[in-house]
Length: 337
Image (cartoon, rainbow, N blue to C red; front, side, top):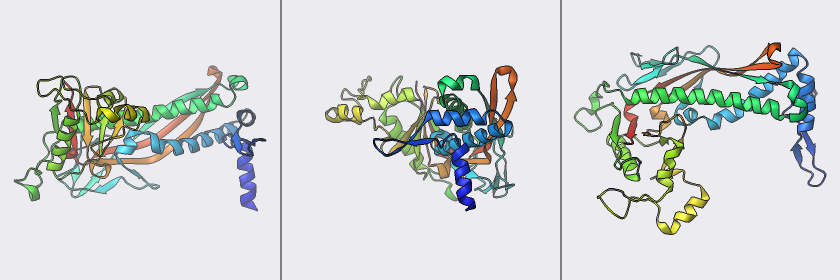
C-alpha cells in the first residue's frame, strides 16, 4: 500500500513523468502541457523547487553516463560514503593526476598504493519561470541541459589537460622485469604526422605499433571532430611516396560508407571525438582499465538557489571528481604538422 501511495505521489509531482494516452495509437506520450502545470505548482514554493532540483538530478544521472568523453576513456569508480580514493598500483607505472585544485601534477606514489585527490566542478544555470507560460516545459529542461553540458565540458577539459600533461612526461623509470626489451620504458610516445596537415591511417597504424611494442593493448583514438574528415574522405597521398593514396575505404564502397555515417572504428580501434582536443593533435590510447581512473566522490547534486533580482531561480550543479593517468606508456600523441 505504501509503495502504491509513493508511486502516485511521484506521478503527481514529477514533471518528467507527465504522460497522456494517445487516442489513436493508445501509446503513452510526453505532454508538455501537463508538465507545465506541475512545474507551475512546484515553482511557487521552496520545497517544490527542491523537488524540481531532485528531478533534474535524476535525468542528469541517466544521461551523463553515456555522453562525457572522459567517462568513456577512463575507468570509472564511484566512492561509497566516506571511502578514500586509494587504489593498488605498480610503483613504476602511475604517471600523473589532477591535484586538489584541478591542475595536473606528477603523481606521488607511496608503497604499492595510489591515492587520487578530488576537486569540485560546478555549473549554475537560471530558470525564468515567467517564460514558462508560453515556452511550456522546455524552459526548465533546456536550462538543465545547458547546465549538464557545462559539467561534462569541464570534465572533458580536465581530462584533456591531464592527458596532454601525461603525454609530455619523459622521466618515467623503466620496469625492472622488462629491462632490455622494447617494452622497458614507461614514457609516452609522440611523432609527427606522415603527411602535412592531416592524420592518415598510416599514422594510426604506427601508433598502434608503438603501443603493441610496449605490450599494451589498444583502446581508442581521441581526436577533434574536424579531423574525422581525414578518415571519412578517400585519403589520396599528396607526397611523392605514392599516387594511389593511403585510403582505407575502396572507391566502390566509399559512397555507401559516407551515407551510413557509421565511421566509428579504424583498424578495430574505436574513434572518439571532442572539441577539447586541438585540431593538430590526435591521441591513440590504451584501454581505460590500463589508461587511468576517473573517481567520483560526490555524484551529481543539484541545489536550488533563490535569486529574486534575476526574475528567476538559480540551480547549481555540483560534482566532486578526481582523475589519474596510471600508464603514461599507454599514450601515443600524433602531432599534425
